[in-house]
Length: 242
Image (cartoon, rainbow, N blue to C red):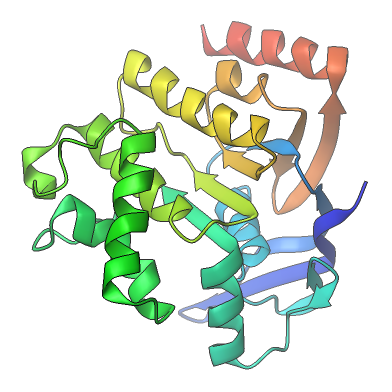
């Protein structure tokens, strides 16, 4: 299967005061086209850093990164931004909606950066908002929505450019279980349509629904699991959580 994202021996360190913190310590990973991948691990294990580098939001301190076969670790900022905006959608635990803008205007933001004409922006935003069940909330502001509705807006914003890859960092972390299951169902629907989906989660029940689980610890990938191994890990994690 064709690798949409490939990381090779990626290190990422940060300077915090006088101390150097190594968030990633030589991680190699591939995300295949059309794959649904879950990334799990304790806080501070490097999950979000891995997500940011895979999504071209951050650059490695050392190592190689490819997006659909194109090396990206040394691309100029403007070129990297265009590549990211056109091919990758992001969903975060905090919705990062602009409070002064309507739902539709929030979803149009990536298209503004892409230089899409106003009429086309509006049409595409309305279409994806219909898709996530918010076709009647176009003119509402974020403070008029529930948490689940805000996350649906964030998913619509991630989808409006037609990305090949959606990266979701704890997308259900601020939601109740029922609403979280609805959001997970939306992501699974994207995967069924052929979009590659990577989800960072602390929830073992949601992780086990992915094609593959990557478990991280101390900036390293401890193990990768598929099939029955994935299910057994989910059982063990759920038992530990109880």
